[in-house]
Length: 169
Image (cartoon, rainbow, N blue to C red; front, side):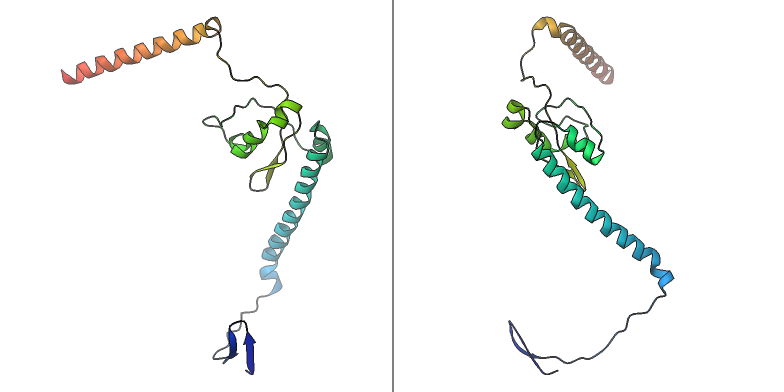
């Protein structure tokens, strides 16, 4: 080639081989092209819907119903704690969503959370309907649960002791 200038200096390029791609008939690659176009369209649609979702959740911060109606979404109800509970999957296992739910603006002013991406192509917003701060329950309220737990622990301890005695015998 002629002299080529780049950020790294001047170069002379020598072509040593050419590899041509195999031409395939359109019908052989039609399915691949359709899949690729569908993926691109779905990604474009998701970006548009995600922006609509984010804007509506922010602009209509006192209710989730407008965004539910506008985008034909489903509304789910759940009881959550500050930390993800064992075995929980999906959006409620997202630390970002839980942090947003327990932010002061959401709790005090009963506003929507910002739109939070909780997974690939998954956005969530939440609204606190009722909030109860963590507290110690009175003994009368938990008496039966405590009694059942103590009995279970004592039964396990007795079974463990009996099992160890039989093994040593």
